[in-house]
Image (cartoon, rainbow, N blue to C red; front, side):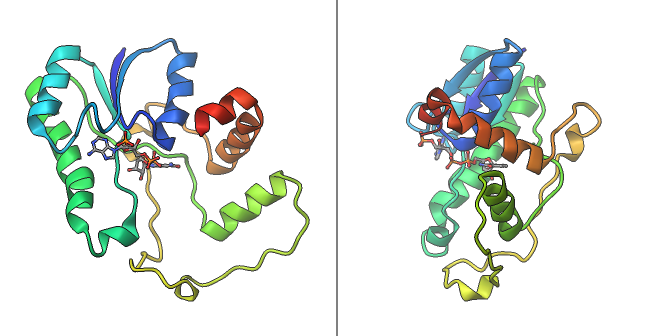
Length: 180
Ligand SMILES: NC(=O)c1ccc[n+]([C@@H]2O[C@H](COP(=O)([O-])OP(=O)(O)OC[C@H]3O[C@@H](n4cnc5c(N)ncnc54)[C@H](OP(=O)(O)O)[C@@H]3O)[C@@H](O)[C@H]2O)c1
């Protein structure tokens, strides 16, 4: 299968890249300067040129605190960009649009506890309430996402297993350089 990938330097794609290499899949990648996903014409051109069978969208504006005052960029990248990919999907009828994440869910505290435990840390970790942190954006209490549309098509690993694997991988110098 041939993939078209956006957000080539982002964290999400770095994880996905290992899977593509493992399966010897073909793909073309784009950073934000090469393919600005809010630009519908550019998205159409990229898809028509490369004719992918599937698109992985790793492009995102994740700065939720900045988005409280400068919402336009977040809206363009997180709203209009995926809309453009969906429009091209409709025209091409070649691929679908779905969210992918590991199975299970955890709080930031639980995630930190697992990371520190796997790293051999023996200190005392105290949970904190979100209102103890002064941030511009009011985060939701629960923001779990699922991979419903893929759950019966592929086996996705749990977040603890994925965290363990990630920590092992970044101990390898090459993987660490790739991550940075
Ligand atoms: N990281 C995770 O663990 C994780 C887990 C599940 C889901 N996700 C989801 O995956 C998505 C990406 O997250 P991430 O952590 O990989 O974010 P990230 O590391 O910040 O990467 C986001 C990428 O988006 C690109 N980008 C920004 N504006 C763009 C534009 N206008 N057009 C095209 N590309 C643009 C950036 O590329 P340039 O720097 O080249 O502009 C950057 O490489 C988000 O929707 C996130 O919710 C992430």
